Image (cartoon, rainbow, N blue to C red; front, side):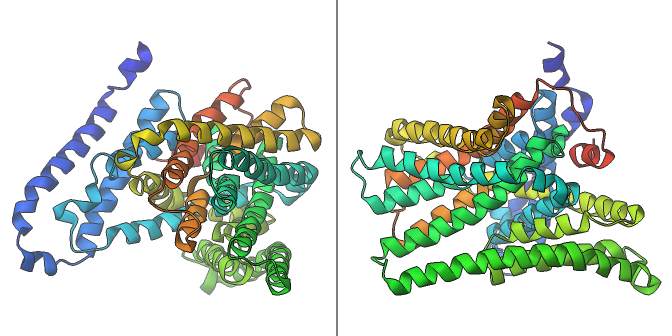
Length: 462
């Protein structure tokens, strides 16, 4: 009863009232810009300001409500995105926001958000701790990809699907969005635990293997398999492995020295000079990961963060952590979580596909928990630790959406098919289900972390 009454505290009431006032006022103000000539002359920045303001307020309100219900803040932000998106309000297509391509602009803000999220997570970890769970990461990463592919094929092939879409669907569900689980662990204070380090190391291997699996599937589906196609695949493997090795070496040995050099030059270091160079390194490493390494940009940003975690100057490191945390969690990260829902339209999901979707959802959850979890068990974790790693790997998130879009553009998966609609829904549901599941498997122990930066990341603005 106390928890329910807490939902209607004065602060939350004011937030909700502000949201309703803005939403209602926006519809009335449409009358002021109703003609085609006026719409054509709109400065795109004007509707963008309003849209970002609504997203940030809604994100904070949803996160606060989730915390009131003892759930991770991320869950509330994801659900708020669904409400703002085409499923309910479709607010990006209100007339007051016409005249600008807000969807693409907000998506780019969201991509910056997840990039900084992974950079901040990299700052929180220590390479020596990741190395300790290397064996776990290898087994969990490999089985976390192989088992979903195998189980998905076992479900789809008997259902009459050709091997190409069945294989690509498996590859789609082999992906993992580490950013969702990592944010929950950061919020709960478990990111620096053995399971948190295992998640980050496993996700790195999972990311590489998933991209390799996508490349291999595209080659096979195109009727390849010849010497030229296999050599092309080998080039991709060497490119990705080479990039990760070189990037880690550069981040570990060069980035800290570069910032130490900047620190000794006041004209560069003063007025947030150190955080600016740290931010630049995250962006450049993110760019290089996609452009040079063929891996996800968040992998490059994470590697940059790991490199800067080595900084010996505690004042420099604290300045970077505080500035990046404020930039990320006040502005960009909330946009990322809300954007997941903004791009989802549940209203168009075919009702007749629900049974098939539920089977895929069950398989998607079991395959990650069993695959990555059993791999962690083989690597030396006990049953509870292995279960936690498996649950943390459930979310498919933005990585799954990227892979399924590749299948759509290549023609392997039909955009109007029951399979596509079900896969899209499974990606969304695994993303929404992961935060409460992660909290559930970790709730039996007292929070192990008293780190002020972890607390800042999860409570900024409270």
